Image (cartoon, rainbow, N blue to C red):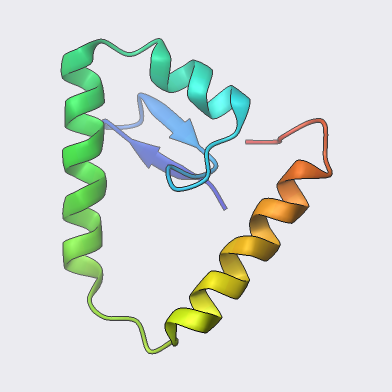
Length: 77
């Protein structure tokens, strides 16, 4: 799943575990745009509410996603 920010200006696979391509896109933004991106991501998190998953389930899922990304050389967005 990808995430779109800044009114469609940038689409990344994840801000929590960005790929090299995601980092290139983020680095190309101005410092003001990076601040706006971070503010938008934080606001989305605040609005999303509490998860029903345990922290262990969340950690397991994050590790599985990171492992899957590290085994592929091409990251589709």
